[in-house]
Picture 1: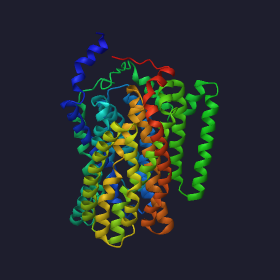
Picture 2: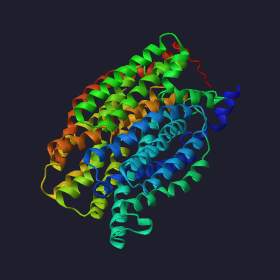
Picture 3: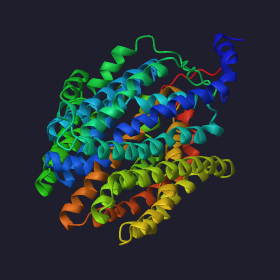
Length: 525
């Protein structure tokens, strides 16, 4: 028995075992806190607008674009670092950073300071899911992976729901106790940021104690550890962050610089056009930076790691899956952000009650939906090669008529009642999307695959969805119309998922063959 086989034999009992479930439980807590810190701005939106004098489009920028663009942008090099370094240590650092930046949000005195803090939260949170997806995929076999990743993803809904409840209660209590400002002159929304940010610093120590799994041990494809990850990480970082992107392209020589510069020009022209059309300079400047950085990184990856490039950017099935799931996120992120402000603004509902009901419904419904979706996807995939994609499609078709009821009814009771099934079904695709991104690549590429997956859900979904609904609210004078306008993404989603459903089995079956053809040296135990 060779060394790799001996190591695998010694630890194979951990795959799907009690310790794997313990690790999954800790990672769920991390993701819960991740979304509490990310989502709490929703229930605080009306107070922030009043104190800082910002618009719906500005709030969409703060929640979505300021966070999402830098989350996705830094997720690329951090995702690659997760493929090379200790994932638990990286997640610990990221958790500490985003918790500190959430707490600092509580001291923001203007739009610019709050935007800067949100950017910091996005950069810190970019470490979480690339590390978690990779760890979970090593601890759980393929036949249980969608369920495990769905359980992890349930933290999204638990955290999002808890954030509304916690934020609503803190704001109401603080403003009642200190109507003219509390200690340090803090308003209720500022106190809420502090309250949810500080606990993450303690959770970081727990994460640091987790045992690192062997890469690929769930599939018997052990990846050799990277002896010197940091030079490669900084190379990855320079391939993403302007203006270092141009410097790196110039060093490569040949046509690399010309291609990079051409991509930059196209993006600048596109962003300038959208700025002129909408008048929103920050929004489209940030989106432009994100798009150019993604283009630059893909071109750099093509030269530095052809096998990874081939299985991600060179695989149409992967790209269509990213676009399809990203377009679902375009709707779901915006709905999750704007529902609480909509209820407060439209029905005059109490923020604490809104936080309790929408937060509770969102947490319970999302948890049920994402777990049920993952289990149903595993069942469907065991019977049909791409059966899980059919399950994901339900998350597009079924909620549409429910959205029409929720955002057109004049009854707060009907609003709440229709929100329940919508929240459940809206979440069924999340574990499926995560598993699809992992199943299309080799174990050593999972961090990069996760980072690319989040390009769709954050750059497209989070970066555009909340802003689009807020902008349409300004244009039409109705937040309900703004939210319903998100349904324009449905045809894009359905076409993408239909093509993925047809091509996924072959893409999964040929991943090792295509990677080897691109130069991969895969070690089998």
